[in-house]
Each structure stands twice: as structure tokens, then as C-alpha cells.
Length: 171
Image (cartoon, rainbow, N blue to C red; front, side):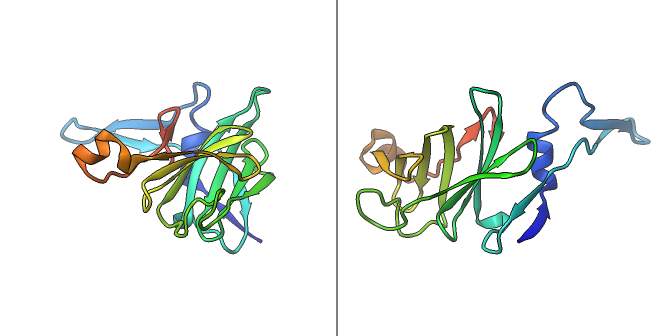
């Protein structure tokens, strides 16, 4: 297993809590303000050799007990990895069913993104099939939403959805 320091993710997830200084402001010789990001914390998350930053969909979730989870959907394998944001430890893995069938999320995952809704459900959007699926924590498809049948899709043409959670971009 290799270790990757996800500096950009550190800023998104860890520096947003508390009143810590997130950037420094200085003025240049013309009086224009310049901003410099300040490192606040870092977290090392162990990932396997099939993962890379560009082949992942990223989401976050806060559980009822206050535990903050960070998840990566590995588009190469169809596995969602859940990490504890405080420790960086891998909590669990969930294998999605790649392909067709009642629990399938599609054959091509290169344009798939996910959003964690709770401990037991996620939304998975596939831009190739323009479908969104509600998936249980066991990888079972609970409901499918077909966007090509929607009035918005028919009037405005194909579109790509980018999920956000707490106004933090995850794709």
C-alpha cells in the first residue's frame, strides 16, 4: 500500500473548522491585495495501488455521533472506500455492481460520481447513461432516476451533474 498526502483535500475538509487562519493577505507595490494559503493541518490516507487522484469521486459525510467520514469511489474497481477523517483509518469498503442488471450502476465508470447521504445510502450518477441511482450500503440499487425522460433534459439537452456537499465541490 502506498501513502499519499492529499494536500488539496486537507484544505477542503480539515481547515474549514474553527477560527484558524486560512490565508495571509499582503499588498503588492500597486496596493492590490494578494492572498497566500496557509497550511493548517494535514492527513495521510492509505490507498491501494489501483487508486489515483484522477480516477476517484470524492464525498464526505458526518454521522449522527459526530464522526466525519471521507469516501473515495475508485472508478477503476467500483469500490467505495470510507475513511475516518480524524485518524485517516480505513473504516469500510463497499463494492458497487459494475455492469447491467438490477443492482448494476453501468458498464463504464469513468464518468460516475457519488454523494454519501447516510451510513446506508449513496447517490451514484452515471453521465454516460444519464441515470442516478440510490444505492444501499450493501451495494443494492433501491431506486433509479432517468434524466433523459425529464423535461429539463429534453429541453436543455444533455448535462453533467456535479454533486456538492456542504457547498464543498467533490468532483
